[in-house]
Amino acid sequence: GGKGWYDNMWCINPEETIEFMKTVAKPWLAFKVLAAGAISPRDGFAHAFDNGADFIAVGMFDFQVKEDCDLARAAIAHAQTRPRPWRA
Image (cartoon, rainbow, N blue to C red; front, top):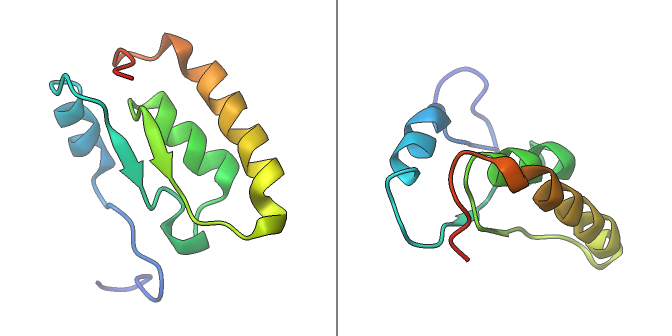
């Protein structure tokens, strides 16, 4: 932990994961990409897909499904030219 690590936690060195996953030729399912609500879906989805995730697993309420699906589709469309090839 440390200062700022209260109820939500996230990777403090995502670059290390991104670099490792560039060497993995299997599909990547990124989970907890919103850090229990600490990161917005717009930012979390884009970051995951832009940096190589093939899928994301996120929790949401029923009233968030449409907007989150729209954001996920937009993030996937934007990530088509990312460095890591799509594996799924």
